[in-house]
Image (cartoon, rainbow, N blue to C red):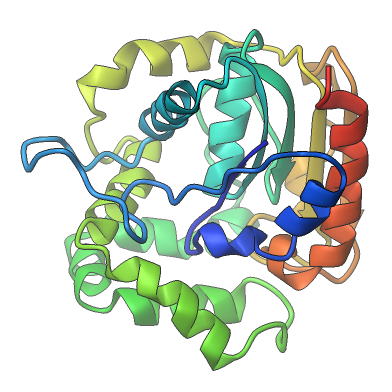
Length: 272
């Protein structure tokens, strides 16, 4: 099982979940996404792309290096976007997919309704020159504001955040972050190396592998109702669970509940 973190977070988001999956008989891998933690690009000339297709290709390359011809994938936030791409475009590689804090809809992102657009203020902010400058100079402060705002208070302390924020000190973190949100809304050019994969992703209308979607009922950035009523896009097993009182970081806020749900899902669909 490959476990993919989101933004602004890091691979330690699965620290309390992986042991439960190990006890259930699964081997897990929790890589840092490009631009986070100890990752580095192979050269200065490589575009610091944060697009989903680029990160999905990273995961495929990672799986190939590990000799994993087929695997299950679990993703939160950015990781959910990556997981959905893999499940939709590479059903021959993906046994099943669990996605947290995000539903899946085919095609390019739709322009959000006013309420959701307001919650996405940070994405519009990063599309401006001044916003980009702020993120480059105050990345930790910017990330901390999201943690404070995206769910109920009291689920983390300074030590937990500071430990995760060390992953944002990667010299490529700001570039990858900014490009990810800008390219999503067509405010930046994509990396042409991933154009074919992005084209294939946009063309897929259904997902044919088993899917579990977990969404915090008190998610204040990607509203829970955004993942409602999407059953028509899935032809295999599909289940959506709303986690009452939980915000945008269920892997950290409700790790016990998430662990149980993931273990049961993977036991049914991740061993074939």
